[in-house]
Length: 39
Image (cartoon, rainbow, N blue to C red):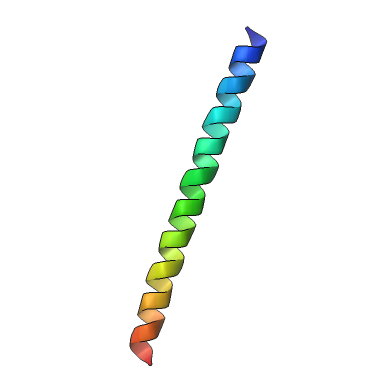
């Protein structure tokens, strides 16, 4: 039972990390686009 909860925690943690990475990349792309318009 404990192993099941541990695995579930690891899966949810990896999903959250992946979502944060995607958001970070999207934010960086938007930031780069806004900076490119200044040139």
